[in-house]
Each structure stands twice: as C-alpha cells, then as structure tokens.
Amino acid sequence: MAVTTEMVATWRGPRAALRRQLRMGQREDRALVYLMIACLIIFVGQWPRLAREAYMTPEIPLEALLGAALFGWMALAPLFFYGLAALSHLIARAVGGKGSWFSARLALFWTLLCVSPLWLLHGLVAGFIGGGAALMLVSTVLAVAFLAIWLLSLVEAEA
Image (tube, rainbow, N blue to C red; front, side):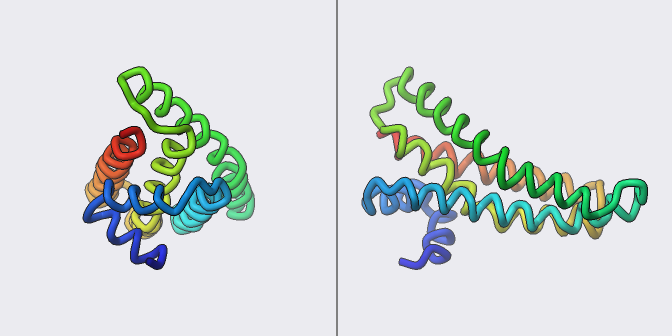
C-alpha cells in the first residue's frame, strides 16, 4: 500500500495501520525516513507563520527565522522525538507493555508523519489569519489528533 494511502487509513484505524507497519519488519531506515519527512513537512508548514512574523517585526529578517526553524525542526526535533519515543517505551514497559524500542519509535514517528498535513493547515492559519479562534481550533484538532493516533498506535506497539 502506498504511504499516502496508509496515512489516510491511519486516521480510520490507527492500530491496524501500525500493525501493518510492524509486519513490514524492523527497518530503522524506514522509521528514520518517516521522522525526517514529518519534520520537513512541519518545517515547511511554518513558512507562512514565519513570513507573517518577519513582516510584523522587520528587525528580524525572514532568512534568520527560516534558518532557526530549519535547524530546530531538522536537527533538534528528531533528537527530541527519539527521546520521547524512548520515554514512552519505558512508561509502557512499566505498566506491562511488551513491545520493543523500535515499535515505540515507529508508533511515534508514524503518527508524526500522519498528522503532518494538519501542521500545514496550522501554518496557513497562523500565517494568513493569525492568532484567534481559528488558530485555536486548528491547534486543538492537531493536538487531539496527534495524541489519539499516537496513544492508539503505542497501545498496538506495546501489545
């Protein structure tokens, strides 16, 4: 199944989608690619917001904002997400989880990739509309979707 088709299927059934991902074998390269593509999409999603910030505060050029965001999303965020996946596996193991380090990483990285299109919407709303009810709604939907898909995927990963 194509990755994009599987991403859509994840929204309907996160556990079944992760089960299919796990059946493809333990491939760290695949998990890392999911993470890096998700971080890249999230970074691109920040462009409209950063352009708005650069326009509102001309003291900080757009290039500086983009460079900082690039470093943050492509260098620091992957390290953070590896740590978060390890922490989630340790917590799951403490409450009886039987999964592996890889399955916990895959659950998080796959979730990030699946919700990354919402990050694009979030960036568009933040860039074109700015703060307000619309941005709050999109942020809430993004947070709830991420947590729901991640926790259901983690349950499957640790089963």
